[in-house]
Image (cartoon, rainbow, N blue to C red; front, side):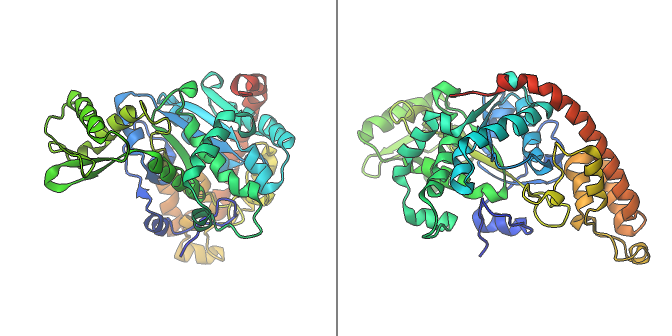
Amino acid sequence: MEFINPWSSQQYKDYAKLRDQFGIEPFDFELPDAPRLFRRGVIFGHRGFDYIYDAIRNGESFAVLTGLMPSGRMHFGHKMTIDQVRYYQDLGADVHIAVADIEAYASRGISLEKARKIALEEYVPSYIALGLKPGKTEVYFQSKRQEVKDIAWKLARKVNMSEFLAIYGFGGETNMSHIFSPLIQVGDILHVQLEKFGGARPTVVPVGVDQDPHMRLTRDIVARWRMFSISPQGEEGMGIFYKGEDVEGKLKELALHLESAGFSDFKINVPYRALYVRDADERDMLKINKILIRYEQGFNENTFYPPAATYHRLMTGLTGGKMSSSVPESAIFLTDDPEDARKKVLRAKTGGGATLEEHRKHGGNPDVCTVYELFVYHLLDDDKYLKEVHDTCSSGERVCGPCKREAADIISQWLRDFQERREQAKEEVNDMVSWE
């Protein structure tokens, strides 16, 4: 059985297997002006994205929450997440970015002071240079935000140690700060739905598949605190079940809310604590659940929209493993000297044949080539030309030397332009950071 560890350097290959094993849904939404990561299948799965898709289609409010681990330099693997966040922001989302300084201290021993310095000097200027808007993006620190810690403490009452061991594989040697840090992430994800931070609305967290344990935990906790649940009931339509006080009164009041939304055929079964909406079916589940959430928030302060997640493939390092800040030769860092980055690309592992003769004869394998992956994820926006690169490599017509030089030229020029913007962005850092 596959095990996902958010803190490891493990590289995942069989994403279909991970989807099946952990119940991740395939990502098959048609988004407006979808950027390359979406249209090329790099975003391969989701949980609960229906809420976000509905908000996008209807021009409704939604939020994006992401985070940074202040433990090293920002590289192209991190850029993937910000590219997605920028797209959502362009669609109207408000953006919150957590500096995971509590998690960095708990899991890696990084002091809060060092974490703050890394976040402000390494990450925030890069976010601005990558296109996030300072006035519409909030960067905050876990250790400074009381609401995050309050949610973690309060909602943790419905989580036990057995579940943590099953999700994260913690052992007897794991320190308690590390054990508590996933609950802080629950607070990160949910607190943006508090009135102070924009109110209850759908929230999406774009992550690599290695972060799925945090999303499963958060969505499970949200479900446990809810007093209403909904499920298809065959000929009875959609069944809504309530586990609180004043069953009959609450179900009658709920029926009035549903009636104002266009439903009319109801049946209340008090012993079963159920309201059946007989003129509804599974296609109405999202609409009904949004009504349930708004209604329940009136008497249950622990009611949240279930946070959505999208999952992207983890970027392969130039040396063949996972791209990692702790392995400098594996990554292109956003602050690399452009010539140094160029040399890294020229040394990168490819999918070419063992010799030029073999490559010409049998062709290469672009699907395992780190240089082709750079083209797919970051360097080429022209899908037609990308297909030509893939096909000519596979046939043996395109060889590795010129292909590497093309990628190296693009990336070195991109870094020059980016770093110029990044230098200018340092003046705007304070416009993006919240200190509470």
